[in-house]
Image (cartoon, one colour):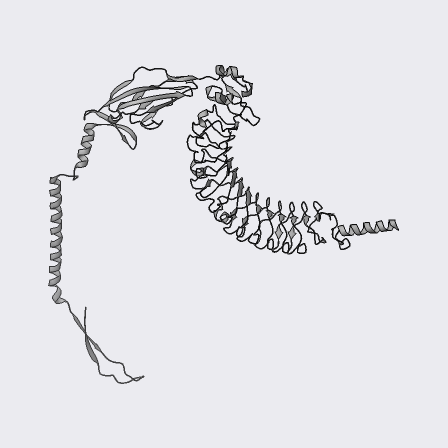
Length: 603
């Protein structure tokens, strides 16, 4: 009796676990059912279509890795408790309208890695509770207007790795709660600005592997809640308009593996809430000084694998919250302490992978080697030879003053240079300097401006000042400034240019460059240009006389013609008389009627 009771109890327990529906076919053939979790797994069972016979209280269905081609209308209408549906990794090319109608509690829908080319409007009808939708790795060409209009609670949309060429302006209409959108590896050639502007709750936008060449002004307008923008692997992107990010309140901005040759200062300066900035794998050569000061909350800057040659003093001035700099795998030879607002705030520094010159400029880093976090990658000296390939952690405090040294910059030849020349002469002023590290050379003109490497007055690559075809206004004192991390030096030179007499040859600038012309020739040219007439008075009189005679001849001919015409006028007849015989009013033969005559005037 006891055994019979146990068996009976076990039977009822099993029936309860399966929802009292085993006989009703709650678990289709070849599928694995987990009644306690209300899950059904039909993954990898070679189904050609969606099987039937599921328990109405199932919460999770997995049909991934099959060969399903079509999802029919109201395919899952009886599964009102379903929350998770996985149809990924099939060969679905057609989903009929209202295919998911009735799944009012569905939270997650996965359609990844199928063969969808287009999604008709109405396919997602009834999915008002959906939170996550994965459409990635399909062949979708376009998102039509109102494709997602009933998915009012959708929070995340995966749309990457499709063949998207166009996103209609109202494609995202209705996605008022969407927070994250991923668009990866598509054929879009421009930012779908109008479509994105529908997503006013969007906080994270990821756009990877696109062929877009530029970010235009107002590219992300109306996305006021966007906090994270990730742009990566756009090899053609080389332009970021100054107002492309206007209106955004980003805390994280990533623009990596693109073709930016400079930090987009004008575009990012308005991102007052930015904390994380990553510009890695761009051919950026310099971080300029005093141009990042508007990013008051910036904490991290990553520029890995670029072409950085230098970071100028004051580059991070004003950034009181700056904590981490990662510039690994660049071409930096040094990093001066003056780059930072306060090195005491710096916590993480990545300098590995750079050809570092271990001299006085890096002494501040080595002295903080125990407090700074190098993230497990110790910087290594590249030069000079005495410390080559030594890691920073291997230096003792005692040897630092002897090894990490610099020689102040100094001008080698300090002999006075005074040039007194005539106008049009080319003048060269030498300024050779020495020091370790190699000092920079700057020339200041007589009007207190920095001389550039281009123009008539320029600085040559070896530091020499060249004044080509000197003019009187070039006269004055020029100053050569040399400097490095250890010190500065300067030298003044004088230039006095004397104007030439009027009959001397002087150079002048034309459209074809500098050419030479004499003052006499120039004066003659000016005199010729000043003549009001191209011929003299004699020529003018002859021309006037000939014109007057031609006029008289024409008048005489007209009078002769009028004379002969008036003489022949009397012989012209001005009227004509015509005789006629009217036709009889009766048909057939008849006698002749009386004739008539009329006169008409000739014109």
